[in-house]
Length: 395
Ligand SMILES: *Cc1c(COP(=O)(O)O)cnc(C)c1O
Image (cartoon, rainbow, N blue to C red; front, top):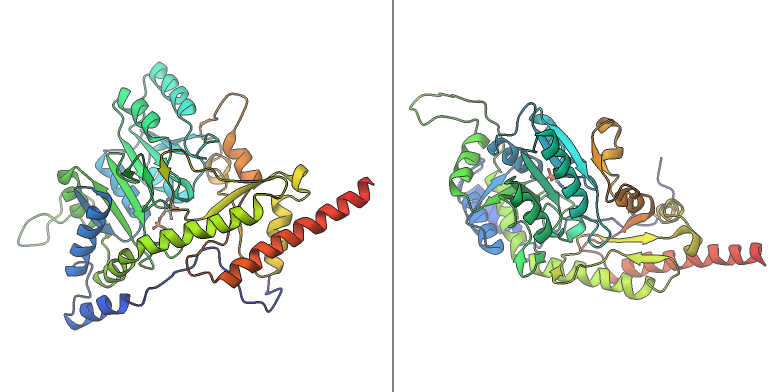
């Protein structure tokens, strides 16, 4: 489909450079550190680890690579099961397939839109009965909101199954005073172009298990043995982050707090202006958690609002405003057809509901006040127009 209007596009979440990135890139050029190693990589790792309060971090080429290495380090392979949040971007689960393992998807619960502890418990009960516990559990923190970590970690600990926390969307968020990403055996961040800070492409694996992260570095550099010649005793990957991109990451990390404040004030603005509309319900922030509000997400009740999410998306798209539906749950993806799925309760699949009724609004920290006004006004106008038409019909 071509451009429908000549209006300047308002993006969902576009890269927001601070300008200081060039300083680090220039340094890399001047010292000729143009490799997937170097001073920026070392410093970026240290700075991220310090920021979240983890022992150590490994800079990688993507968040997906970080999840893949975490699974590999936990020995996940053919014939193993891995529990994974269903309501997420497919990158959370793809590495399970790379390892030849079998995903089992767990539904969301309404308070956080993240993994339902009660569905997780049912999945563990069945796994116990079948004598086939999962090798790992991948928990996602959607749009910056932490999952119910206390409950989830308690269940996983009970069965001694390690947790990988997919915090790709929640860098800078907190759960009960502790940084998002630091709750599992491994935590994963992404610096993809659409994330709250970006290196254009990149990721980070964090852990308090230094030995495991040493192994991650080894696997990420083609698993090259310590020998004077090229020697390899196992299969590795080319997953390290470039020293140039790590420089971009260092400058971005310096402004992370500002980015979080911007995203949160964008959310607040939407909330103030739109939460009064009938049928508009914003994604909650669980008590004692702090969300980076990476994306402003909300539910639209078609009956009360007089408009469906699909129609609202269409109306925004006609104004060249990029909004998106909430992630399509993985248990509904054609590529995962037939995969086992545990809904929140036998009678209710929460992620199906969130997908059908959820929408993400433009939330980039580089949005101008005028752009924000444009989005808000257009939503109000669209809803009002619908309402009027409904009232005429029902009169
Ligand atoms: C972006 C994202 C990833 C993948 O990160 P990349 O750096 O793009 O590979 C994984 N999980 C979630 C939930 C994400 O949003």
